[in-house]
Amino acid sequence: MGLLEGRISLVTGASRGIGRAIAQAFAAEGAFVVLAARDAAKLAEAVGEIQAKGGKAEALALDVADRASVEAGVAQVVAAHGRVDHLVNNAGVTRDNLLLRMKDEEWRQVLDTNLTGAFLCTQAVLKPMLKQRSGRIVTITSVVGLGGNAGQANYAASKAGVIGFTKSVAREVASRGITANAIAPGFIETDMTRAIAGGAQEEWAAKIPLRRLGTPEDVASAVAFLASDEAAYITGQVIAVNGGMYT
Image (cartoon, rainbow, N blue to C red; front, top):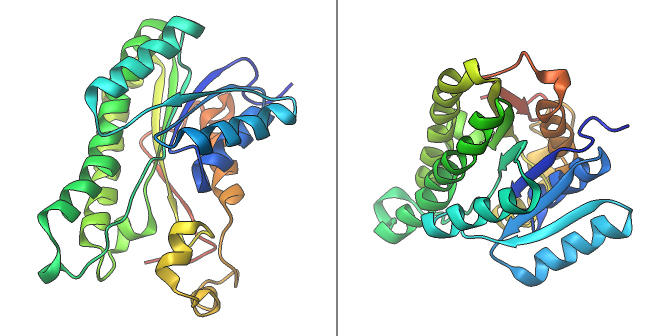
């Protein structure tokens, strides 16, 4: 029996990268995974991969920055499955620019998805979680949210905000058996980081004590642990998954 056997898990930004790996890890541990994202084609592909390995999964078209979309999506999950045991706030975007050149829209898009999206999704799942008096909320922040990064003031602000948000939620709902934690990945090999690195992956890896970039699976394993009963006494924490790279 897997760590998450029989649980209902909602993972946002699950069509690619870290979110896709998290969904796969949850399914491998026995959860029924609802993969949420805006890209229907990539979602269908990700669901197909899980089902091909004998896992249980379904797709949910969802825009985390839109309240109506989030509330309708969570209601659909509860109607179909009767509960929500896990929420993984993974959906995120970057719109990098130097601060003096950053447009209002670049700021808003990142904050709306990365921070407001986590707020909307968490608020929506809290109702069923409070009713069932149990739940696990894991939000993906970033090493950039801890130490900042030039050209990413919007992204760093959103990811730092996620940390304060997580700690506050943890205090609010602990008495109801619900935990809230965050994972702060370092440099992970995804489409997003490849675009940022611009071919400088080896240079990045040299700055990491383990001398390699992380993989989406490295992050997924930590998230699955926090979602399990093994982590029942862990809440309000930020777990770094960064190969020993500290800021």
